[in-house]
Length: 88
Image (cartoon, rainbow, N blue to C red; front, side, top):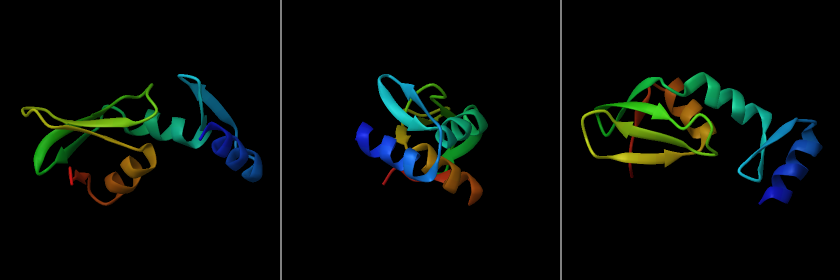
């Protein structure tokens, strides 16, 4: 996977950085900085996005037990569509 990301970044001239030994496109880092800590919903319940320094974001219910990991580009897409995440 790391090799694929490096090839992708090299192909499109994107800078990348390393998290936990894995190369990640720089654009993903900016998504993490932009959306980490923001309020949203998960299965219709109030939730929050966390995991700024992780490869994947975690959306966790504030008053419930449910927490789900998503790719940062998925976080961006769902937040742009209103921020209602589904666990399914």
